[in-house]
Image (cartoon, rainbow, N blue to C red; front, side, top):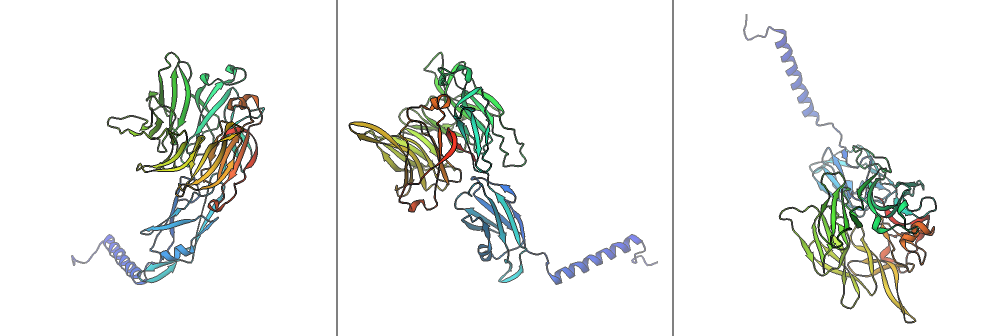
Length: 485
């Protein structure tokens, strides 16, 4: 017997398998890789994106002709943006947020892979789809049947949805960035004084909106689930703010026994931390990253952590009286300076501390919002006018170019206090309310059915306009509109 000759069937099978594998390898090397180039991943496929989503990516399985991709990529409806590359991954960064209420389609075909200096096979035609949320907003109704309740209105369905119970008369509310939860102050209808809600008796609540979360892996909560956050037994609840992450609520509270005990309190909705007293302050706002509070403290603005830690930094801006708002990414803030000549100035202050005066008025500056690209500030302000020895503040809504300080458009508003404005998350419209002359904001809740909501569309050529934009009156009775995102 020859010991080198395989005699077992298993040995013969192994030799045959290895020989077949070698032949297959040679054939593959001779014929080349026959896998067709294609889009391997599109990160927005079948997603419901929001204004927070600023770029999508296409990942290819092979090196691809980049110039051809830039020419052949089609987006409908069009979304202006810029292309950048990292290996076989292309990123398309939007110039502005995708307008809400639309469905979008991406098409790419007629592009070839690159093989060194040569072109290879043509890409498999690709089609991707995504959409943006319906255009929705929340408001406090002044209608006869649902007066004082928060209502969510969807422009697509045109059906109002009540989310707060009829026994609570809402005075103010804020919404998180995902529009999952609303935090609001309200008084019990049984405690109304002369038909009006008493601010001293208001309590702080949260309520679910019922809007489906963007992350499909998260559970969806039904609308109308109300929880008490702060009662009014020992403290009066004056003002509050709600963090963008939907978890932290900061409330300005005053002790009923000791009025000098006037401070901010913070609480987590997930109950991870107990209510904690922070510090005394005036007007305040939570930063977009949900980690700090910017508050008027003495003669200046103090910025401090919501959850103080050892060695945490404290920034103080002595020049400004209060902070109105932040840009969505937190890189700039709109602040007000109270001047010695009794005028007021609106400043844009970036996160490097660079200040730029945007606007100055003899009246008041009530609110200011940055456009998504941070090139325009929409300002709700007043100008002091004197007629027949009588002085009064005339409100207006202005769009101001931050770089040039030029007023791009201005819409005169009814002469009244307590006007509210809200800029849509895609930056394409402003909403504001109107109350009958002689009515206070509390009176409109219980004693009037003439709360008017206005929609002011922002044209894409706003820098070229020479006339004010005309607002559209909505067929809704209410006040305090807030866009949902």
